[in-house]
Image (cartoon, rainbow, N blue to C red; front, side, top):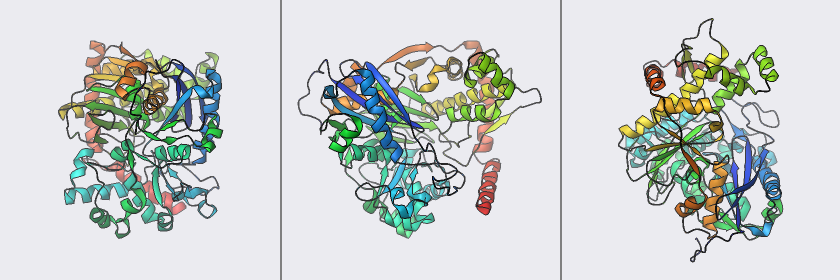
Length: 562
């Protein structure tokens, strides 16, 4: 699908990358020849995340997280033209546009792409809306999907570390079928938002290889069989053929060209290249110049995704998938992750930041995070006497269980907010170390750890990660890693580079070894990490099932009061 004859990048050629995140979308204008980012713009989603009620006030049960698809189009209408104007780039200089999205973020649509939630008769039906990646209400369906796969010895299961997640396509679709069969029957396509936005840009529905492989259980050219799906639910047998299956486009390929309607939204020329969709984490790897085997990129934001390519195939417990060419052609692409990281820090600031601290922070012209970070930075490792589990949004890897919840052990009447804050920072580093150890114990070496995302700005957090993992940390050289990666793929699709590795050589950027582990702190963290692992296995591997019991009780009480 790429042009047959590649040409050297024109010195005045530009591409646009658009990153659709959890709360907003960001557009960046990038020079093709060297990856220089001329300008960016951000547009917040008007409806943000619907986790308590729909726009009309319809209440939502616990563990739901929905979005409104028109918010994504508003990003195209606002962020793209704003970034273009700020860059001082003429529209005719832009040769392509690429996008990335959170995943698995998925929605039910009609055959022409119309979201069901935009039909008046479904405006009050929760299952007609976008299910955001952190919609965790399909855990029961995921449990059954996994149990049946184990019972039937389904060969695809090992490529997901032995478990698929409640965040993924099949569990969420099965939840729709079982809880609102009318919406399920009405939907004609079950579409990743990553593909829906490309569909809106170019008028063609092309399913991207990344979400198909990692979130849609598409392995070795096929999905789970209709016999298997029928065993889950008789009406689920035709899910793949009737609602999911679609031609698959490879990463960096052309999905189509910009339509007149999308050109009017964005201010870009009609007919320029629109790249096949991608996932925010995966597309960041080449932006961080991570195109060699063993380079793990941790994209740290509201959650963290751990992305790595390798020439070694291994079954890593609790990974989110291994896909041939899922990140880079010719290598196995691995994904793991933590469902809550920045979200956990934000939760604590929102609920545990006292008024006197707020006054002091304001007087020092600091944000709550900056104020707590400064206080926490003055502590020695272990001084607060706490250890926490980073499961406030469940556990993605390595336990793959979103009915788990957070824990903080060791609090006393002397415990201060900065103590808890530091313990939460450390807990997420412990979670990342757990993931790295799972890879290496499975014969998939991790040679370098590169950090991307907004949390790289927190120097204390980065140093904690270096000390806890006992590894030097490299840092991406871009504040807009996903959008830069999407733009780089657009450059490949438009023919400016032969492949994403070549684009990364010119456009990718990372600073190597910015944070070095301190031997004394690392030794102290080894002791704390041992306590973390005891708690991790005690609460997460069935020794004490209290979290699941509490979760069931919470759901029952919420349903009774609905």
